[in-house]
Length: 108
Image 1 (cartoon, rainbow, N blue to C red):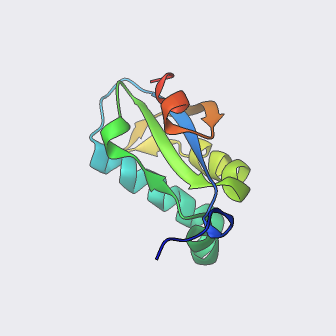
Image 2: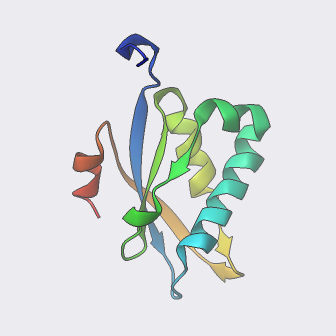
């Protein structure tokens, strides 16, 4: 039995860019993002926002984060506050937010 559209969770896709000297694996990026979201949102906020890093969409230090539409601003804040991955200083900036994966993929 399918859910009616009114009960489905609305989602947004946020495109981020990592500015750093070193290259990082998708696992390292995923771990840093999960830690930052957990620290900033807490366990309850993490469950309500249901973030998901699209690992197949990590290209040239750009990645897409899928999140609940009510938690976009909090997720952007949490991810931008990441200052280091593997003791390498980084800067993360948000490029755009989109309602569809196709439009978000244009910015990769």
